[in-house]
Length: 583
Image (cartoon, rainbow, N blue to C red; front, side, top):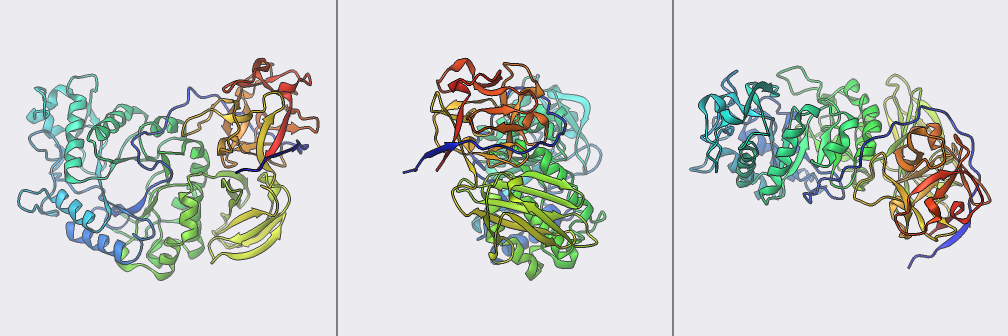
């Protein structure tokens, strides 16, 4: 049973001023297909190494290595086929069957009797205890349109649902957009998804999508669910953080950047470059609020596995793995698994890194200054995971991080998360030298209590400050009163800059749109250093917004669950008084 006690709130420090956030629309819900509910998926994608030259034999060799190397046992269980599995004769679009769906290139993936070559491959993958993924792009092939192929199960034909404009297909071309207002359009996607399900597909990558392709994403999301088979949906690529709430309601993961690969066309190596890796820092920070239960940001596959062929140095490889882990990105391998570098393999199977990735808490960026970037998140048990990155690839640097910057008061026991749980002492300011392009990834366990983190309990109601329910909390989520339950959405950390961080210390208590008038709602927003997220926590129990001078207030002095919080003129009433509750 939890032990609970309360203490008066403490004073906060000074603020730093950045631009206030702008409001978003209503909160979206997470994808509800029951896949990747608590953590992002793990596996291997053939695009990183096989790229434009896949075959059944080559794919099977990688699958065999995925198992024999021990990577499967570490959690990498998806083996995903990317582009070039289907017949592409030219600009007229992919070859199609009698129902307008792409057909397998049997010269690369031979049939076995009446069993399609892709199903043959899926069966092989499943025989190894793994899951099988496949690649598709939006629209309908121009060949299906010209042939007026029937849409399975209907009286409609492909030409009746097609638009004249081209849909994205990066390598084959020849795809036409679909008018989803036309009868038969959803049926066409359903029939395609049904075929994938009959082959044993467990994961679909839908490439070439963006805001203009929301109808395609919606159609594929519906189609995969109606198959009755659990099939994950991944979206690609370079998707804007502003559209994250849309993708999270439809898919299990979405690429927030371009390809990680840096190899010239027709070559597998190098797997990546520092340029392609380092631009993910900003993308991970910007997209962080959109990730959570059922749907995750995808930073693309790793550029780690093949030693010098990786294209990045050993410290940069640690950065690759650590940033993905802190961001709770998909952990997808992209290397030649038949020729793993021993040092890279040790990194890929590092249990501590994998656990940080799989905890389901996407870290927030708390420092971006010169060559230093810091990402951090707090576990439900009070442990913090912190990555201190050096973005200078020419020299090492020494960085000092006051733990109070995170909201961790007092001292903490520091442990190296990459190098065999090496203890690094107990400190209140963590100072470390970080290699060029490298990272210091640590756990910080407070030496007492929960490191200053706890629930904020209303003096009048006895209820906790709470982020409105649901599986995922997006920018604009209402802050309210609710029965105290110890949930991560009720745990707050007071930083030395006056932020009240919650959701694993990755999101902040925020005044709506930076407003300063009584009645302004209080909401959840990704921490951005803005004045609307700075609070003075006073010894008399009030919490004052520094920008407006107004107090955190339970609207209407109500005490029921769901009572929204607002800013109001400070009056000393009980509905404006709060205390910390540690457990």
